[in-house]
Image (cartoon, rainbow, N blue to C red; front, top):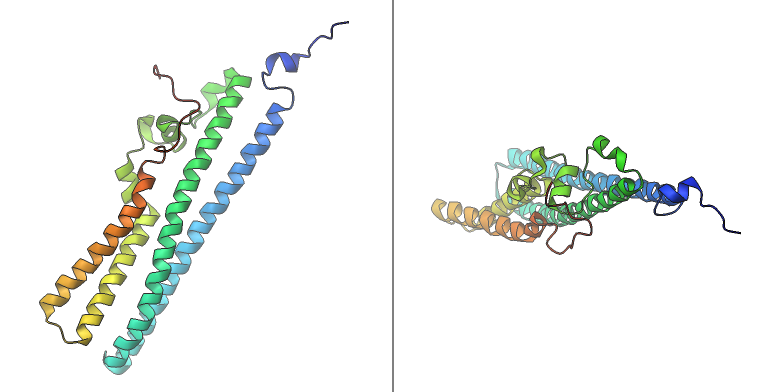
Length: 227
């Protein structure tokens, strides 16, 4: 006797439990995305809080000692520690950006599966369901969904802000070190600017790979050419 397939099995190409499995995976990805962004905000807050505390402490010490040698000595101890924490924060923020992009791509693939199960829901999906650049742009709600505009994304990213603050701290350390040996003002300015640009360029080079998150990923569900 031939068993008749249920309506669910006929309309669902992945089997009767597919929707529940996909939804569970989707919620898992949403939870992971929330956790990594909470970590990003926490790390940034800790870094900026420590920087603020160090600046306040140095300001009070400078006011009490007239910015003498003791202030410079304490600054040369505190600021490298703050700079180390800032560089570590920047590195982790770049990693989080990469993880977050991969999470969004994974959710796009799940939406693609939803559409295979229920094609009629496509007009109601705001975010993307393709795992290429256009699909990623759609999921980030970028107007037009015609690309990620990586340079615009770079300059407004939290990691870039942290990198700029790190470079400023590095410049301050260089200036304080040269000031301790009574270097001329012109040397202080030039060396401070060089220190800023050197560290900012190094951090920029590290962050650059995040400008093209799909460089090492082959799309499984690319956007059709007619869209």
